[in-house]
Length: 79
Image 1 (cartoon, rainbow, N blue to C red):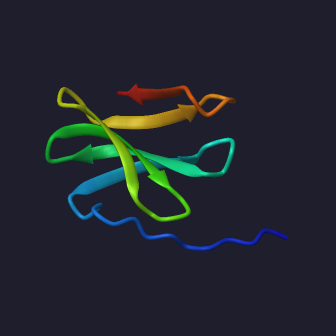
Image 2: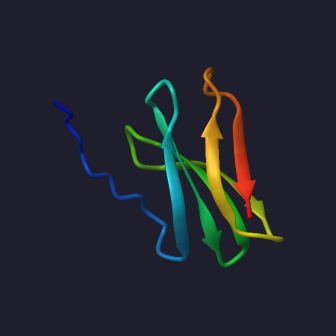
């Protein structure tokens, strides 16, 4: 059986999250979508719920994300 806990991330009220992926080590989740400043990807620390890094792309919305097996590489996809 799977045990899950719902985690609410602070500061997401002005963004549209399209996809979320947990990093291979289980320590972070990466969300991608759109916001006031265009497309964005955010890295969240699961233990605290804090955003630890934000990447912006003012040109387009971000639709998908892939976390590399070592957790150090993020690939984001646009339309």
